[in-house]
Image 1 (tube, rainbow, N blue to C red):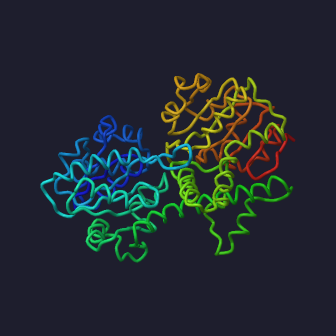
Image 2 (image 1 turned 135 degrees about the horizontal axis):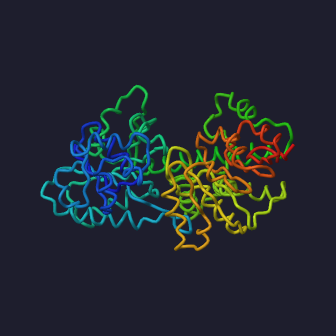
Image 3 (image 1 turned 180 degrees about the vertical axis):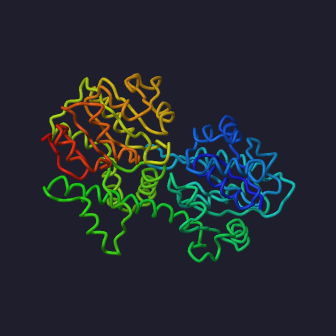
Length: 459
C-alpha cells in the first residue's frame, strides 16, 4: 500500500517508520525542511533532536529510501496513494477547545491536490491526530466542498505512550478504526493486516464518532487514576503518620479489579495528551450543556500536584527561596523522552522564579535542547537565571535545595551523589519518590519532602 503521513512529530514519525517496517511504501510529509533533513540524515543524534524515541532512529536508518521517504512537496507524491494519515498538531486554546487551524490548513491543501489528481482510485483520509468528536464529519464536508472524487474518511486514534511508542506501534493493545463504508474499512484492514484477527491485539471497527470518543475517554480515565492516587493516596500519606505508601498501593491493587497502572504518586502528569485531551473533553461537554465537575476536579488535582511541594517546603520546613540556588533534576515530562510539553518542570521553573531564586541549575539526560527552547531568555529575561549541566552532580554543586521532577532511573541512586555534592543544611524535594534510602539522608542532616510522605526533618 502507498501511504502518506502528514505531519512528522512524535505520532507521525513513529507511525510512518513502523508502517515502513511492514513493507508499505510510506511518504512522511512535512513543511519543515530542517526537520526532514534531520530525518533524511538517518543520524540518531539529528533525529532525536526532534523526536527522541528508543529504537525509532534505527527503523528510519534501516528503511529510509527503501520503504520510507521524506518529502515537503505533497503534489509530487500524492498520485496513487491509498491512504493519507493526518498526524497534525491540535494544541489547546485558552478556553480548553482544540486549535484546529494547523489541521484544516493541511486539509485544505490536501483536498486541493486530491481534487485534481489523475488517479481516482479510492483514497481514505485518516484522522490519527486527537480531534474533537465530529471532526470526521467536518472532514467529509471538506471533501465535498472541494469536490474530491472517490474519497472516504476514517478515524484511527493513536494510543502511544512516549518512551515506548515504537514497541506499542509494533504490538498495540488495540487498533481502533472508525469509518462508514466497507470499502474504507477494507483499505485500513490491508494497511493493518498484521493486526486483523490477531490472537492478542483487539482490532475494533466502529463509527468515526465512537473512535474519536474512545481516545478521549481512555486518556481521561488514565489521568483520573493518576489524580485519584495523588488526590487521595498522597494526601493520606502526608497527613497521617506511619502510613507506608508502597504498602498502601500493594494492598489496594491486590484486588484484581483495581488497576496497578497509575497507582504511583508524583508531582503530576504531563505530556502532549492528558492535559490537552481532558480540557478538550470538558469544553465539548460543557458547550453541549453537560456537567463536567468530575473532569474539572481531575484536571485541577493534576495541576495542583506540579508545584505544591514548593508550598509544603515553605510551610513545613520553613524554606525560603528568595536568592537561593535550586537544583532541578529532570525536565522532560517523564523518562525515556525529550518531550517537555505540559511537563511539571515548566510549572516548577515558573514558580521558583516567582519566588525569587537566584539560579536554577538544571539537568536532564536528553531534554536540555528542548529546555533551551522552552526557556528562551528572549521571551522572558528571568530565564537567564537557568543554567544547564551535563550531570546531576554538576547541577547540585553550590545549591541550597533540590527538586526532582522526572522519574529518570539514574535518580534512584542519587543519595550518595547528594552527599558528595552538597552538605547540610540542605532540603530535598522529591516529586517522584525516587530516593528509597531517604532515611540515610535524614540521618546525615538533610531534610526530605516527598509526595505521599510527611516532611522528614534532619535527625
